[in-house]
Amino acid sequence: MSPRQHVTAYRAPGLLIDGQWRKGRSGEVVAVVNPADEQPLDELALASAEDLDDALRAAEAGFERWRWVPAHDRCSRMEAAVARMREQADVIAHLLTLEQGKPLAEARAECHMAADLIKWYAEEARRTYGRIVPARTRGSRMDVLKGPVGPVAAFTPWNFPLVLSARKLGGALAAGCSIILKGAEETPASVAAMVDCLAQELPPGAVQLVYGDPAQVSATLIASPVIRKVTFTGSVAVGRALAQLAGRYLKPITLELGGHAPVLLCEDADLQTAVPLLAAHKFRNAGQACLAPTRFFVARPLYRDFVEAFEAFASSIRVGCGLEPDVGMGPLASGRRLSAVRDLVERSMTPATRLSVGRAPDVGFFMAPTVISDLPTDAPALLEEPFGPLALIAPFDSLDEAITRANANPYGLAGYLFTDSARAIRAVSERLEVGSLAVNGIGVSVPEAPFGGVKDSGFGKESGIEGMESYLETKFMHWS
Image (cartoon, rainbow, N blue to C red):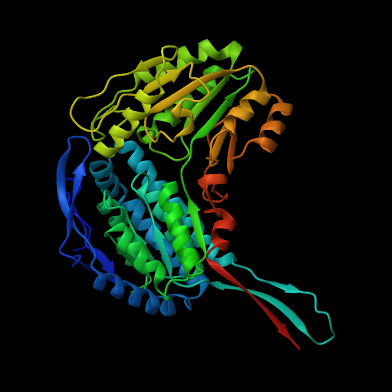
């Protein structure tokens, strides 16, 4: 049941429980579908209630084995797993493209980014410092100690299944926690291949991987006294439900939810630099990225030039199967996602709006890069997360107006600003309601810096020392 396989084959993986790969025993299966041709790749057997109980017992025992492994040894083992991931990057990327659709180059990049994340956390395992607090009385001592929070339940989506799983796997394992990862049923094989690289270096039970009915899995894991920490990446609606469930059992939870990232282009912005950067970032993974730039607010003097340049770039993107050469954008992940984005476009169109649509294949869950400009302020697409290849462009007449419009929806994950004005940079950095801001670039997420949103985009941080801290308990010790 191991996910190791040749790059030309696809086989749905089993569950990883207590160091062994095995088939889910619920009797229920779901089809894993290639979104480029709508054909089934294989069937994934889902976990039963007994499988989940076994995973919880394994995580409890695995925590006791893993937590006492010295930090330097934890680091070495995780780095060995990272080296294996890099060696198998082509195999993992091929699986990811088959089941998720993104171009092979993007899949390879995601695999290496996932490896970077785990490596950074592995290195940070050696730096989980406590501190000594000056004592109040002679002969006494006050220490602050750091230790692993305990077994972790982690839930990850299908859009960037490697990177989003790696953030949770890396942080939990580096801290000394065991983890049960519930991966997305749409993309099981690529995640299993990555987890297998880790499992070969870890004691049994340190990491489990399960697939199953989302409601059953989350309810079972979060309610269990074994689980001491919950972390989730996905939609706002599911995040709210999991937060309520975690609150019922007083479990700390980290949530990285949706995004609808604004871009502010001031009058002094360099369009020759900004347009190719932003358009490539917008249509990466067919726009299925929570940090993708989606709402472009452009200073009126630049507006028409920006719209025309952006439309030209979008129409030049070759859309097709991610395994084909020179493909710049693959399909959406599912027919459900395709229908949702098309519906949003239809609801947002008015007689005054301008629509520019590129070309896409007829078979598969493809949608052409789409640009809508001259949108009214109440257009549904400006308020609802598109999560697809849809760029929305509107003019502004003052920076205050742009900031107000950028803040006028419930999301607050990432934002982008293009200007050389120090005054504009200061104003936007202070007033734009986002967790990450890129200025004259697109870099809002790196392993060594915190990543997470505000408002409905979640709470808590992943990556950076803040992300590591969320898997640690703090204990005060007073020696008299």
